[in-house]
Each structure stands twice: as structure tokens, then as C-alpha cells.
Image (cartoon, rainbow, N blue to C red; front, side, top):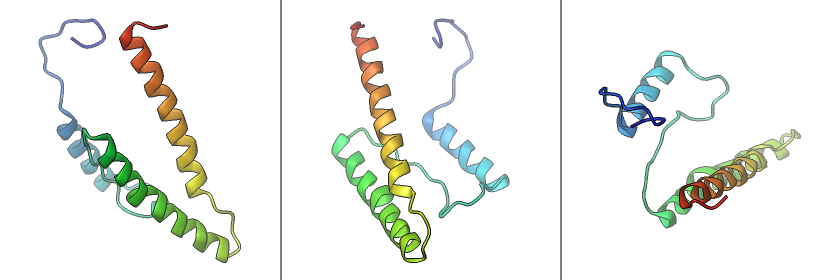
Length: 102
């Protein structure tokens, strides 16, 4: 069931969705990217936070440091923090909704 409507067609999996997204970014490249888009799915919170630190925060701090040295405004770490906080709020609201707490 998807959106409370029964449908005989099977939806695509996360793996298939990521392969499709990778194929689309190959065909239609994104503007101003630092590196190629990729996704890692894990069910362990500790491994997720290790990935966030090594794949987002440290590279963002290095790029922000280079921008600051060049006299430009740093922005990557600040953007990541805003996105992280908003996603955390959405997850808490989702958990409360699933638990039946409003």
C-alpha cells in the first residue's frame, strides 16, 4: 500500500531508485558540484554519524577553510548544519506521528 491506496504494481526499491538517480546525474550533470553525487544507506546510527563526519563535515570544513583563505565567504558547514537540524526535526515529527503522539 502506498498513500493508503492498494495498487497491484510493485514500487521500486531504494537500490533501484539510487541507480536511476545516478544514471540521471550522468546524463544531466548538476551545476557547481565538488564531487560526484553518491548515496550510502545504513541501518546503524553510529555508522551514519561516522559517515556524516568523514564525508560531509571534514570536507566541508576543508573547503570552507580554502574559501576563507581566498577571501570568500565560507558556507558549506553552515548549510550542512541547517539541513541536519531540519531533517532531525522532521524525523522526530515522523516518529511521533507513527507512535500516535500528536
